[in-house]
Amino acid sequence: MQPQLEKLNAEIVQCRKCPRLVEWREEVARVKRKAYKDHEYWGKPVPGFGDENARVLVVGLAPGAHGSNRTGRQFTGDGSGNFLFPALYRAGFANQPEAESRGDGLVLKDMYITASGRCAPPDNKPSAEELNNCQPFLERELEMIQPKVIVCLGKIAFDRILKVFALRSLKFSHGAAYELHNSSFIIHPFSLLCSYHPSQQNTLTGKLTVEMFDDIWKKAKELL
Image (cartoon, rainbow, N blue to C red; front, side, top):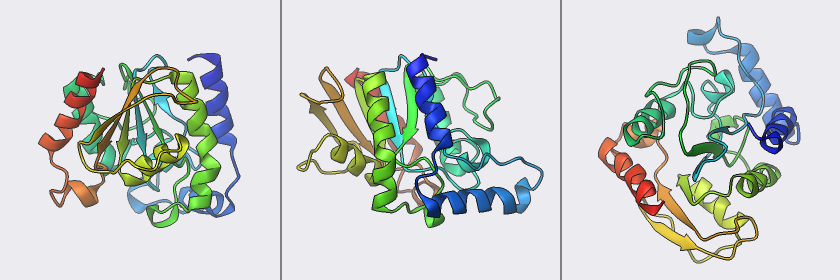
């Protein structure tokens, strides 16, 4: 990993800016869910991961209490990841469809995955102030990675990217794509692609189907 990115990830892991989130993530890690009582929970902010030379940057919402907050890697060990990584594998962005732990051998190709918030929030709802505290981390990732395509998983991620780039007129809808220029963080033209979040709330209800999600990653490749 490039030294700048490694340094940033070390900073992210040590962050304690949001008292409510620090208390919650550590309590969850201490109390644990019955199914994971023998697991050692991560219980810290979760850094981004993937290919440091990626042309595609995926932005999610925040770690799940018993997913990323347990495993220490974005979208790993929960229902959202169980829907995301098979799709990335089918699209050629991942070397395997499973994501269970940081040491499971998963490698992303041409993709880096990050989030709007780095700590598991109560009820999966980070506050505006907490997201603002995290935003500089996202801005620095954008500067370092210089993606050609940004895929926003869900409206909160989309709204956060709009805030980063000081954009107001764009609307979120699944499959919408926008070409952007003249950013203070990314030096070349790039595309912004919207998708529903692969949460079980969306996937189990049929709001987001396998076919719909596969189309997102096909579109991401086309935009490259």
